[in-house]
Image (cartoon, rainbow, N blue to C red; front, side, top):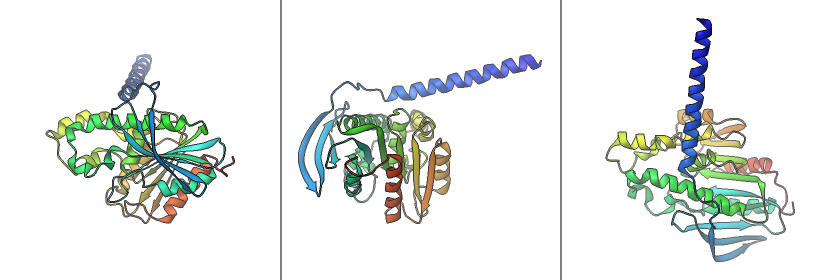
Length: 296
């Protein structure tokens, strides 16, 4: 009986493992794209902010949408670290401008930054959403972020072994989806993220069938993707006064993340505007990406 029980338990364990591997493969398949297709880049303008060059560009990922972005480049010769920044959905600076000043400040330490407009940068995006399209649009957005990462890594001065990601709110959550299927990023900073896209999905326009919506979007649960980020370091920043992210949600999200990881909570609202938050984030990036001066 003991032998039979052992064999049965082993069979069950192998089945669970096979199902898990199948689920991971399914999730990765959702966000496949032709990585060999060129990322068409157009420069709209360029300006100097001290020794830092801010290039106003657009690029065309394989999704039919032209994406606005800033490419922030330090003075000097590489190699430099690279950071992809994704903004929040908020009352102001709900676009690529949100982290621009921070990216310019980090540039002299040796960072090339790419800041992109996400789909929620469109005016009144949340209220105009068609819930039945959320699944398709979420997949498209993750592919666009992967293409943005392609663009950042294509810069000749960028060290491909020192790549970071910073996302706030929706920017953080879609960064988690990308993180679970794309292993090219070394460190993440997730700011004011909740544990599921569904937490916000029903605050606006309602789907025709909530049950059908939940079933279709079940493959986009953030915690499933976080568990697949095996080696990259992760820094979670939460606000005690955040009306959208409860302490329980924050704990679920942090628990799903693998080591190495760190969490800090601030006396801040969902805007996360305290200088301490920015300072801690930049210190984290400096350590994790081994930043120094622009000549490094």
